[in-house]
Image (cartoon, rainbow, N blue to C red; front, side):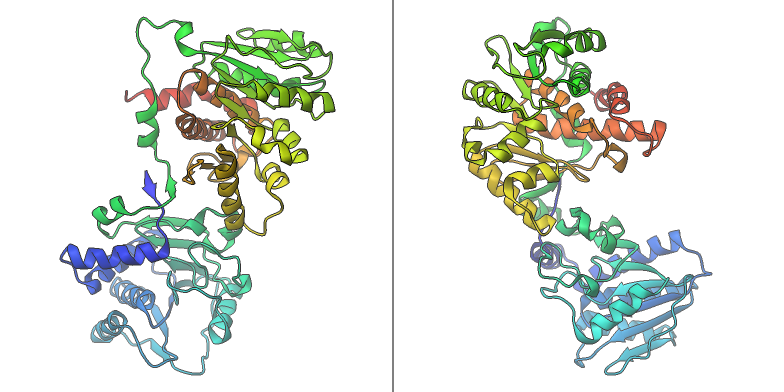
Length: 506
């Protein structure tokens, strides 16, 4: 599991490493610069001119060191160091001296007016103006430099963070005054801001560079934000006993579908059957009986009293887990049936799609949701409950408040789908791709979650494992058919390979 530390914690991690691991700050900077210059030289050959924009702090020190190393590798390099206050950090000053000592000529120190170089599409700009230490929007001359770089056709590589972007909350930032990087080389760990869609235009591709920051500090550091890794997932998966039978893997109930929405119940049911459940019953309106029975012969189909939609709660005595919502519609009778069903629900529960939309119309009923339930909204469904948000940081904050208030797990779907626990922990999921943004993909996830809960996984395990394997199946499917052609059924077809990949080492 990879932690996401705040920028303040990352600065503390640097200081701890220097103090406790017998390494000088300048040597830590040299290590970072070495990895950055290696990454740049791997991606671009000597036909590219390197233009370095450096600030007066340690981010600028990194940039100056990178300029020296690329110059020594034979690249044509120019550097513009902005020293408007007349003071450089000790490490930056040391690197300026090292740069001059190696015979570097194209060094320009800016103290007042700036005559910018002409930037072309063939140029590589190294952005080392500001790192993670800023806490307010750039303004004045620095804002002008940022706008100048952004207006060019040059490829931009930012060190640690694009200049002007804050590592966590950018609610009060000025977007026009933030560098738009093509590549961000983050030192040691990612920043929370990397996981918010509105920041993609600034961050571009991001890659982590391990400069040897103290693992001891990182292990002890407390943070609610983490990235799930494959090792976390494989360790969760329960091995199957040789003498096991279907009764050992749970009986799940799926309440899904309405007239014209049989597909939602079919997709969820198929995904559930492909995720290890012992028995599945699909509760559907009468009109969908033959469709579901034919499409998913492995499932038991149970008819509702109503021809077209869910209208009567189900006795839960024979089930180990319940999922409700895909395609059920929002009829008034369905709403009452949902509330009645939840009032008697004492087994693990997944609420998805229309079940969430019903609660957005009855927000005073939110506290009727059984504790430890799993809610799986996309951004639109979440905001219909919590209200419109200005950005992803605010949305995540409000989602954490909701999870705490109703004591439930929230799976906020999207790129880096986020699992939010009642305790306020947030797990970002690394699998998945834009091809999965298609109708029915969420129904597939609901089916997977139901299967895991029925098998006895805890809610947190089901969330993290389910989201990971859902995204992994999506990645396998995208590799087969491409992102544009990908459908929810393709994700289901890829589930066996995804599960196989995760269990082959066990």
